[in-house]
Image 1 (tube, rainbow, N blue to C red):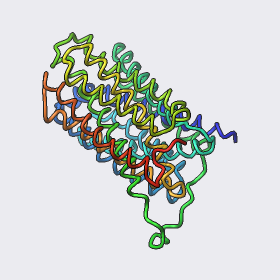
Image 2: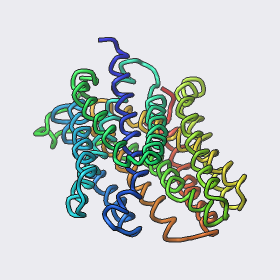
Image 3: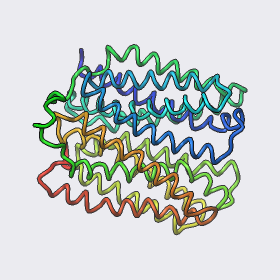
Length: 386
């Protein structure tokens, strides 16, 4: 098999994940109307999904250590497909909640296992790939949102979910042959007492990048449109432009980050991304108008788009012999960032004050800077170029 063949399959897995998540979050209003639930219930569902996804990340670790990340990824895809198939037909809240929890577990399993696979194919190809893999996620998420928009206009609210179910099942069936079959070398579980511990200082440093990136992502994804509509009082047609600018910048960063790392090194690109994020969040906080918000969200998108692939690429190099376990643990910081960005901003501010609240992701980024600098100068190689 060509070394790049698994890379294409894994890119499809990233794309399927982006398609599925975008479809779910954009049809939430339809679920709300069908089930007769309120905004607070939706918020609790999203928070519960983060908790379930964290459990899914742990499950991916267990599956990958025993059978390999290929099997873990296929299992996660099947869980997502079953869950999304169920939510298209159930009309009672109890079964819907059970299906949504299953989706959360599958989400976390696929998040972790796809990153395990991404690191494996990157090592096989011998070049940085994670940026382009995450670009597939972002591009598919944009297509998913457009698909939902078109289907809602035609009165077919659940059709995007059924399309996603088909994509997930097809990928799970074909992926068992096409995903990378390699496994990170590791000792058997019954040898656990004699194994060296995982590189926790490096996990915390790399995990801090993931937390910062997803704090930005969750904050802007959840609150940018609300801020523009309720805080700046722009028109309904204009309010989504902040999020659109953010996603466009995320995609651009992910397309460019691999070549940037090869040319300049991982640490300079990481620090440049952090500076862009700080400037972006500060601009939103101190320039309370539409141009300032759009420019700030776009700059923050460059940061979040670059940091995630950089972090998971670095995680795979901390202990290549136990890479699956390291990545599963780093992936947990993803959901901590979602909680900080999505939940905390809504608790501390509303209306015009939401703009100032976007300083919170900047504070998280500032806390990361010493960790990156320390990691770059330490014996560990978390932030050295590939």
